[in-house]
Length: 623
Image (cartoon, helix red, strand yellow):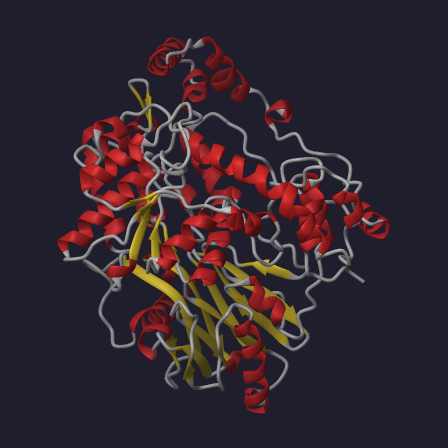
């Protein structure tokens, strides 16, 4: 997992900066994520897993051993600054084939695009990642994060300028970052343990770069330049559904191929038996074999049938069939009590855990097996493998009542149900004015947990909690896809996976979030997603010849075995390890640990769960 970061001192001349002092600051930041940084301008250590790192300060750098000037840094006096990248460029519009070869690699390409067309030039670049451009002459820094947010980038202002890094631990480690808890965020999270904010963090004053925006920062608050406008993508017309399915297959193959990189022998993949993960695993395996390589393994979140089971419904035969057909090494989950302990009792302010319930165990085992990149199907459900939410309500809104009933009836027959309940959930409710759909929203607490220390409870009560709109179904397939894109849950999950990737030395790759694939998905007609009663029709058709029919035409996917296994581990870990871990944090300033210890069960899912994470929070209380 590559990490980038650096410092911008906007209030002094660059010639006045003490290189040794800067090197010391960077070394503290680097050590926070397990990296070792040496003096500025040298190439030194890396993580134990061999993951590279690039730090940029003015015209000097500290780089990981695997990084080089050609692929991670430009420090050319003919250029306007120093560029640190965690960037994989897949295509530049206006050029045939892959990005043009250049001795200086993606760094020179980014600079050329910016110099040629300004921020608008980046709209031509299809890439995963982020970069930091330091322009010392103008005392500014330019940040960019790819439009889907596949890599994180965090920003903190300090008295002397800015601290920038792709991991929260590096930001907070800087001696001038206060590292105080954001009370408004904490208040919201205590009311709803699933709350997140798309641009703020739990650390006061530390924000996230907005996906798809070029951000110029200097002495002022900065200027944002959008480099991608998905709402303006034109709709496809004149193509048949079979032709669109063929194009979807070709685009998915390309999205997988270009993410395999150069070190292909260290590639692993998730394999759940669902459409998106199964297809990505199969396409990656086929591409690797064509080049003489193999997947390290395909990893399931479910336990093996021998270790845990049976359950109902038990769908572990689905990933097994994919693995058998493609001769993949299938590794069932080896999630253990230590993994669950790590998930439940971590400091989520610095080590986010969004959707890591099962992935903590998978990433540990995959890293031990030598995997350094993990292909994931995450993002398929929102775009090309979308389930067609908004389709039925949109038909009814356009007055096509008979067509609405026919479509609901076809879909209900496939699921073995009657269509009448779907009329209410999929048609009537989405057509209501949004202010009336209160029962569709998540029910959250309205009072702060009683486990808080009184002084902290008073501070929190005096602060209005942050708000973030919940997703509710509205008429229109494309509208729902755009709402999902703008909601922020995609990048929120990828932030957590990237943080975990730094810990174990794995880079997560998301082919289904290839911008070319997303733009294609947003251009499709609504019947591509709900056709002949089948949701996700276009992708089911596209994967003909890639996935077994039993997987392609499986109406619904349930991870019952994985959920049951996790629940059984919780029942063993929480009563035994919970009290021990809480005893270690008795002096925590936020939570009365004695009150928490009085609870028989302490986990994120019960009454005490919303206060539990604060017991392990290492941030300082606000003044």
